[in-house]
Image 1 (tube, rainbow, N blue to C red):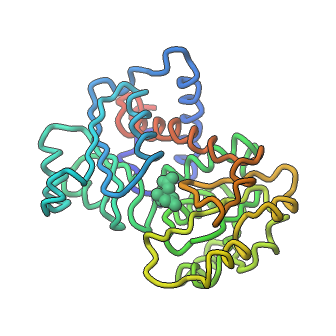
Image 2: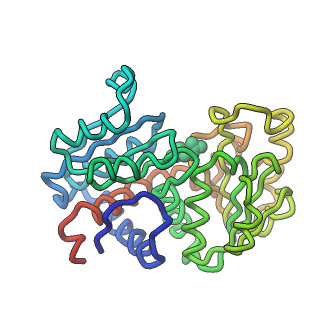
Image 3: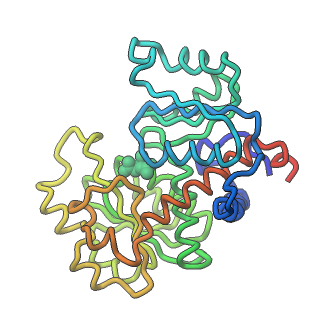
Length: 312
Ligand code: NCD
């Protein structure tokens, strides 16, 4: 399977998603070997261009590329000519002119990775753009949940919290729907994206404002970060009230089914959307999600940049 780029889950077929997850399983085996890398992308140079903060996504893309023997270069807008006012177009065209093979891009503007691809003609992997998509996050979430719960078809996942500002929820909705997962979105009305009702009706997912109504029925609870950096108004009365209504508190852990797993894409606001007891719980997949990120990103890079990937 050859992929030309990974701008979003949108545009991927169910088979492509499953193939990416299956390739990621092979990549996990590579990462478990004593020699943790394969030569698949030797001679390929990938630029990690992060115009927005990141810890796990940036490091994981870097490790994934290195595990495939690609060369990586890091671009950080701080300390670059972007700080002098150079435009995104000039920046990516300048980097492309160095002779690199592709980009991993995180940007605060929705659509920036697609523009960069059009401007450079090079493959781009979207590492999170504005409030639009974060495809590798959805793939790694599916991977970690599948590893813990078995086949995901028919499973029930609740995605809880700041849906309005979340690119993770958009990619997850598309990915989980393709995998026939039942999804319930949970948030206060102020943090539900506008138009979500018609999207839910069209794509068959549920919406509720009441976490306690759904929490005991789900196989996985995906808690999302309250994205204070994207909030320019008051979306809830106080943090304490948010936690009371929508946080995965110690008390709420009691009503989960025994097999229910807890996910969070990170970074966490401990004590706000998730309690320390939930984050560090035996059924928390949070570190498994981080670990899965390397294998999933290896799979994506492999299917985009490997010659073998084109004929597979
Ligand atoms: C997410 C993101 O950046 O969209 N984090 C991540 O990539 N692990 C979610 C978030 O920032 O809350």
